Amino acid sequence: MFKSILEAFKNLFKPVRTINYPAQEITLPSGYRGLIEHDHEACIYCDKCEKVCPPGAILFFQKESGDKEYRYNPWLCIYCGECVRACPKPQEALWQSETKQQSGVKEDSANEGWFVWEEACKKSRETYAVAKKTPKSKIKSEEPLCVS
Amino acid sequence: MKKTIQIPLGSQHISLLEPIRFKFECENERIIGVDADVGFVHRGVELACTRSFEFKQVGYVVARVCGLCAITHSLSYTLAVEKLLGYVANDRIKYLRMLMVELDRIHSHMLCLAHTAENAGFEALFMQIMGDRELVMEVQEAISGNRVQFDYISIGGVNRDLTSDLCDLIRKNLTILSEKMEILTGLFDNNWSLSLKYKGVGVLSLEDAYTYNALGPLARASGLATDVRAETSDFPYEALGYTMILESTGDIHARNFVRLREIVNSITMCQNIVDNLPIGEIQEKVKGKPKGEDIIRIEAPRGELFYLVRGNGTNMLERVRIKTPTFSGIPAMMEVFKGSQYADAPAILASFDPCMSCTAK
Ligand code: SF4
Ligand code: SF4
Image (cartoon, rainbow over all chains, first blue to last red):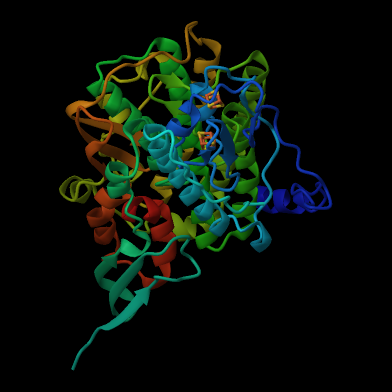
């Protein structure tokens, strides 16, 4: 009993244990799982990352020319790193950075914008599949809105 | 004339971390009947596992059932699927998985101890334990790359390896922690005001523990020798210094002591794991799709966690059933409340370490 009173008294003179965030920076440990980054040049567009991603945070928009466009939702991503492990060219085409994602605000339209993209990507594939079957017919796909 | 009054506790209450509702039938201050409702945070995880996600992704989904024992959930699921695929992990993978589960146990028990102290009116001790708990959280964050959602275990292995820097950090932090645990144990044992709130309060007898199927620290505090770690052979617990911790009185004090001593035991195990880590791959290829049905039991911090996985040879599973420790322990918990004072109810409840988001999932 007296021990804990003494301990409590001593605690009064000990330094503060909490961090004065945001005035003081929090240091992340090295190897922190942060945002996924993609390199357009190195990627072979095999779609493996898109398939393994649990929440579906990576999508590819199929252009009519046959190229694909990489799209990533940093707010949907759970930073599991599964996509990087599935990628045939990890660290070159796709890698996990140590950057922490900032919270989304309304202007980012993290949800609505993404829904539009999801829809557009799905549609682009369908249109492309149809276009491939009937090569001469010209089908125009709509340009989707941007997330950010 | 009716002699009893009904007093509810929850679903929103200052002493509760999570939504649960108890309806106490009280006679003066004494509780004579209890009614519990737990389904406030139902999220439909089980159905999502079979409808929206492929079996390789489900491990990341079930990890979100609970924030505290995320590792235990993903491990149980992964083990069940690996069993169906006929894969047995090598020793390094087993050791690394065990390390994370034991670290998880340490910080979960510390949270419970802190919370019990808080509900007994000892706010300063709550702060102290939560401060010390950071030592473990730091280690877990460094190992897995994230503080809460570890996403460390995947089918066929673990996602990250231990470097020598990490081993040093683990050794350093665990040594500091074991010194702190000694001070804490002394405090829980000798502090007079704490013993007023804990000793002889919320007693679960051995007989009741047996009848109502208590599990985890709740059962062990009553002297019921049940621990999945001792009953299954998925992990080499015996070789790494596991001992079953038993107390006999079955009150809050005993539950605290089971937790305190289990933390010390887990620290020893973690140190042994780091010192004797076998060499091997950390990620192996597992082929095939799950077909058939299998169950797995793992000792989560709160007791036995049970998983049933049924697959039909496709990417989508047929059934994922999760039975969490709190859910199984509810009958025993309700029994403990009967006969105790209403004023003690928050402390008793905290000493069960209930996890509602697990239970309702
Ligand atoms: S880290 Fe995980 S959630 Fe994020 S994009 Fe990769 S696979 Fe998807
Ligand atoms: S897995 Fe890698 S190479 Fe394949 S599409 Fe994704 S980033 Fe490109």
